[in-house]
Image 1: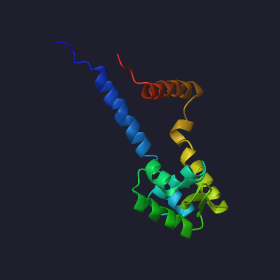
Image 2: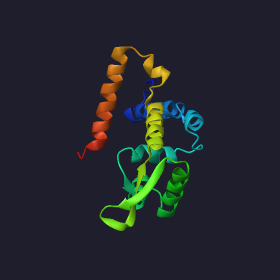
Image 3: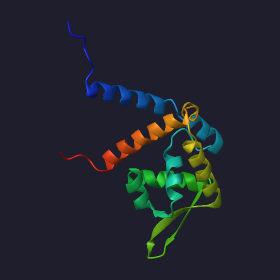
Image 4: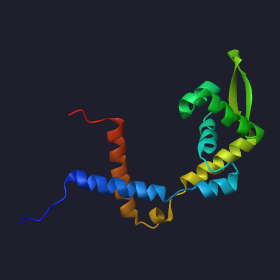
Length: 151
C-alpha cells in the first residue's frame, strides 16, 4: 500500500490555518483599550489611523471604512466628544464637512499605529535568515494578490 501524501492544496490549507491562528493570537485590543480608552472595538482606532493620512468627508469615511453613513457619523461624534477629531467646513463646498485629527488625535493615532506595528515576540525571536525567508515568501504572496494569475 502506497503511503498517502498531502496535496499542495492540503499544505496551503495548513499554512493558511497556521497564519490565521498566529494573527488571531496577536490580538492587541486589550492594550489598545487600556492605553487609548476608546472601547473594545477597532473601528474608532482604525478611523484615527485612516485620518492620520489627511482630512476626509463623512462620505469618504463611510466608503473607505465600509460603514454606512449614519454609523460613520456616530463614530466621528464619539471621537469628537473625546477631543480626537474636529469637523471643519470643506474648502470647496460649505455644505460638506471635513473631519480631521486634533493634536490629541494625532498622538492617539500614532500610539495606536505603533502598538499595532510592534512585531510579536515570536517573530522577533526568529533568526535573520528565517525572517528574510519569511519576508520573501510574504512578498511573493502579496505580489500574487496584486497581480492575479490569469493562466
